[in-house]
Length: 497
Image 1: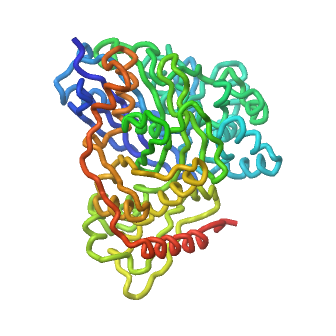
Image 2: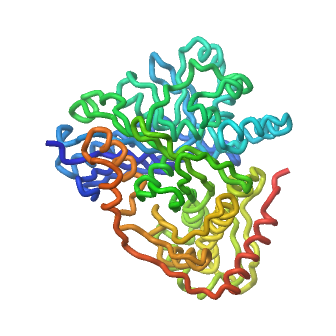
Image 3: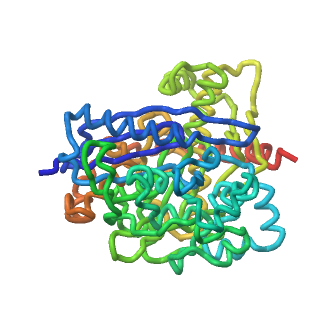
């Protein structure tokens, strides 16, 4: 009798594997970081071999930590950093280039060209996305243009494209499965979210052959099985979703108008809009949330902030003012406020609602009395300010007045940040007992497909509150601070000529 579902959570800076039991509780976890590659300013890459090897190793480690075997697993669910783009040889499995990471800005000029042609309106209408280097489509075009012989091989059907979920599925199945789910497909800028198929007009404009693309499946469905040699047995591969959609599912935001925010490398807020694809007029994305089996697709509005936890990593790795990311909270708590300092972490441009690839990181308001503690606090506050930007846009688009925000991700454990977030939004912030909601969502999707869990009513009953942060900042103080943030953002925008 299977006891667990294994979630593979392949993130931007690390690969994790988590075993969940029938109660949705963590039975074992393993994590491994892997290198970031920065070939030029604004460019970000990953070694595909490092992605695969780290993910396989942590899967094995998690099983060992739980003293579990393949027979103990009901299914495997995969969740992943979205938009990161890989192309590999179908016969050898070898990538033709490093993975181009979602943060990479190398295709901003191509996006500018598409906008100048007016084709961005076609992309918005068909995909729900803005035309930005964030998404996979222009990254695929760049690889086909820049890697010698790639376009000819792609047209001949010799190459395969995938986001990280597809790459892992391919490797886990020893090349038998080339597929993605609707949530990841909706982030490529190549997928029509209304017809639920790859869009011929966009493929033609970017000169991307259909032969390169994976099949698109529901988020909760049995795709196939693992190659037995990887984990000691054939295990059903039964669920896939992009990390933010998976986190929304793990937070059990199943009803329209429920929202969550994930505080990770970036910061991503999703609002469930049910079976309706709500078009944004305020810089948000219309995206697919998930699809369970043959049920209707669930849509969402999303606000994507490119740099959140990554700004804390910069304090650690770039400036050396903290030794561990967790050190930022006690350092920031050493001062009562940021002393008028604002940090805009536009290291790779600004995402929602600004969509400015030419913005760059900026610190303003420094005085001779400014300290490392003020900068640390300003860095944490920047995460909350960016979330407020997104919430304001969601309210404008949907007419929703937010009642509460469910928070997850690593930084949701930072009490100072969560309290400031509640203050900045003026609504409570709720952190669940199981904070690993991204992996949990992937597990839930996979477990449902094989009958390990019965459905969403059972999963909703499993959600439990760990801590609720109530807003306590006076409104005039909140609005004055936020006005300062908007002034700081204006100074960071359109920096790169």
